[in-house]
Image 1 (tube, rainbow, N blue to C red):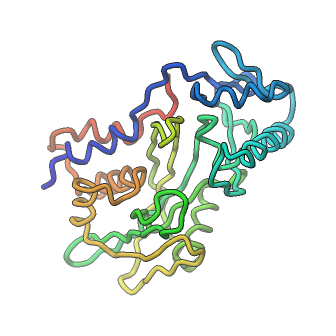
Image 2: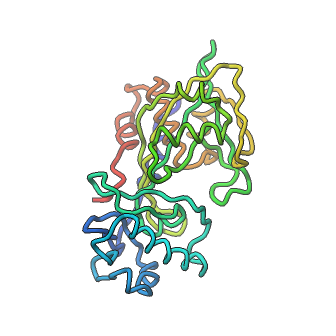
Amino acid sequence: MVELCLLLRWVQRCHEYQLNQFRPFYVAGYKVGWIRPEDLPLFERSPELFAVESEHVALLGEPSSPKERSAQLDAVLRQWRDQGYITGWRDEHYLISNDKQTPLFSVERSATALLGVLNLGVHLNGFVKRTDGIWLWMARRARNRPRYPGKLDQMVAGGMTAYQSPQQVMKRECQEEAGVPMTLAETLKSVGLVTLCHHNSKGQLRREILYTYDLELPETFQPCNQDGEVEEFQLMPIAEVVRLVAETDEIKANCNLVVLDFLVRHGVLHADQAYYAELVEGLRRSPTPA
């Protein structure tokens, strides 16, 4: 049986951050993000939209509607993209809400870490039960993807499109990424969530909530990618998946947490193992710094 300390490294990596000199980002009076000090000059160049103070950064133009805020912010972000400060532009918008789940604005996906706002996503564990145990489908990301090319991923995963529910996004991604028939996608089960709060490669703060789903598949099912984002699918015995999480960096970082949650829920990991409580608690630690 694998030692949980080898698996716990992913919980530690995905919740490791330092906010020295980061400034909170406020919208409509709500703290929604954290901006690293190296990025502050960008915001200072747009004083008509941002108030850059010694203790925080605030979006100006209040009060205004979520639609107006989104349009104002998008115009500036597109300028920063054209100037090379934002890369990997996706033309996908994430919804940013306050702590009461009231929408405040939507923002281009590739700019979320710049603002330190919360990312929402959906991840699906596609698995098969055989006489010799559980087997898990993993997707290998296409080599031409801008982020984590060639890494192993969940069978289906995607970001939460603004103004769509997790269930809606999950079912759509099932079709686009793995060719799952709708009749089969209707049987997926919402099983919880995992969280992350850590620095990306630029040192910006990346915060995530990933809604997790399980889909038990027949042995005859073969995933078939429809959108070009997956190089191949591999059906792996659960012991091999555990080995990859414990001994390698082959699986995309946040996907390791989704795998760990699956292992806990399906009894592959046990409460009598050392570090079990720390691992389980870490999967759902708050993605919002104190």
